[in-house]
Length: 108
Image (cartoon, rainbow, N blue to C red; front, top):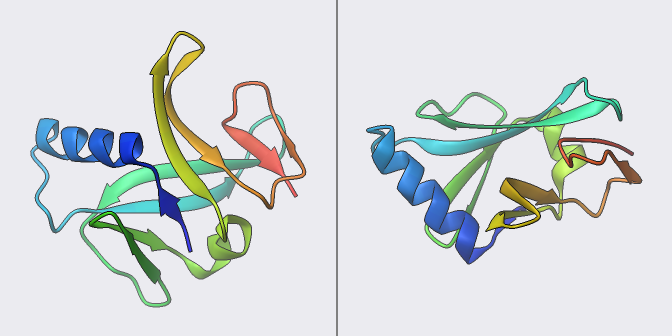
């Protein structure tokens, strides 16, 4: 399962409105190769559910995850911060053994 914090939910709803997306546009979270630690998170809106996708729902937000990425993301919490120490979405991933300073890449 992937959990979404209240601040992340609020930002997703705000971005969905700003980008003229409908409620049919779910959040797709995936993992791709790259970054200084080897793996990077990818977060985007997607209105298509693909074969093999796992679908989670938290706080009224549907989250789509492909099979390959699911292994890296189980138990992850998606948060959003706009404080002094940085702004943006943050992944709190219990599977990550190391993360880079910017928090955008990780390794297992």
